[in-house]
Amino acid sequence: MPEVTPLSLSGYVIDVHYVGGVPTFITGDGAIALGTAGRVVKPHAGGILASVLAVDGKSVITGGDDGKVMRTTADGTSTLIAERGRKWIDVVAAGPGGAVAFASGRTVVVIDGTGKVHELERPRAALGLTFFPKGLRLAIAGYNGVGLWFPGTAAPVQELEWKGSHIAVTLSPDGANVVTSMQEMALHGWRLRDGQHMRMSGYPAKVKSMSWSVKGRYLASSGAGVSVLWPFFHKDGPMGQRPLELGGRQELVTRVACHPMEEIAALGYDDGMILLSRFSDREEVLLARPNGAPVSALAWSANGLELAFGCESGAAGLVDLTL
Image 1 (spheres, rainbow, N blue to C red):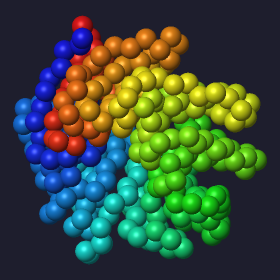
Image 2: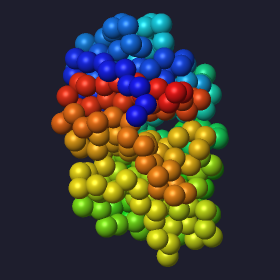
Image 3: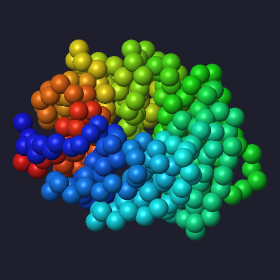
Image 4: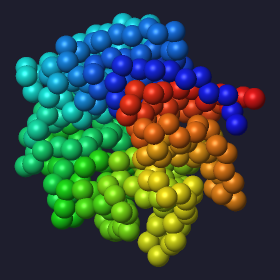
């Protein structure tokens, strides 16, 4: 079993990132823990509701219940990006060229790389945001589908419709497919070149975590007693194909994180266990033993030799895979 460096944080770990190569843990009580030496900053006056790593990996963007959007770097310096009074900022996204997006209720805001602000009102609350890998284009998940928006242009929002509540959105690395997680315990996808729908169902719980494998061949997901990996390398994507299933246990998979270079994935469970599983033969390695608290955050270092994790209890740690 690989060596684990345990950490004890102040609250529910909502996310973890490698900021400038430093493992950075985001907790719901408003703390950002940088590294393993106990250095903590609190850029918000209250709790942190959402976070995302900047595209260049040098900072983390956070939204809080104080109405602020903040940027924090690995040395602990925090700067204000935007402020919206008492509105909660519970969705954030980072895009090419330093662009940042955030949402509060039906209002979606994009600040492009020059600092120019673009604002859009949606018919319903925006529940998920993600930028396309190239250009300034944003996917906005919400009730009954996804809107695709080019900020700063007069082009109308392209609507991708499917009935239901879409609570999160992700794009394949090539920008060819949009996939949402739904309140109705399913994934739904659209192939953009022809609008083909892709229905991915059968989950016993909501899918709260999705991760694309290297080169976008598979989309790994939580929400079941296995991690379900939908293949996207066939002509029609996952339609008509059996998904790959990894890490079968009685406990629910709560977080997934595909390795940045190899077709392997870290799987976190609702009892705190973490497994590493290889796609080709489903061989497994135990990374962390159960601790009784659901795994709520996973992230790989850029070189794939270290895994950071956090749990709902505040338990966290680093798994060293160099040995």
